[in-house]
Image (cartoon, rainbow, N blue to C red; front, side):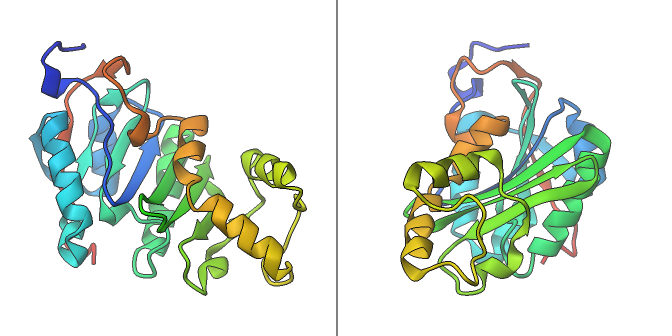
Length: 222
């Protein structure tokens, strides 16, 4: 059901540091139950934007809650620092969550995007298994989080740049590594939109069903 109230219509959701999980389902309650999210409170898109932006600057305090979207063009988005696929304290948990979500719903993806050139990360899980994880945040140990084979989109972009489509970060030349690092800094929203729905690309015309909520994360989320 789509509402005509302006602040309840879909709108781009963004922050300086945006973290989210995308699941191809409208089963908001099922997703929340699987993730252990509680105390849901309905919110408009405009209120959600304020919370997402505030929590992105809140360090550890921002882990305490997430925004769970209504069904958006067949997808549910979970947005908040708790969804970070490349944070050293959250990466293992987020990987496990995506595996469990994809086992139930077929797919699940997790992303990070730093709007000020602070990097990108993507994790793609299918049928209970992570098939790809890649992080580019400027940290020296990013490559240790790499899992799986490059996505077709990654290979296509590397081919456009004249780079090898099969590569090892440990042996790549410094020039090629730098060129690819700059290319991937902004890639997370592009991959999210290609594979499903990106929170940054929502518009008032995005098909909508239900109401978004703010929910508490499990008490051991830190």
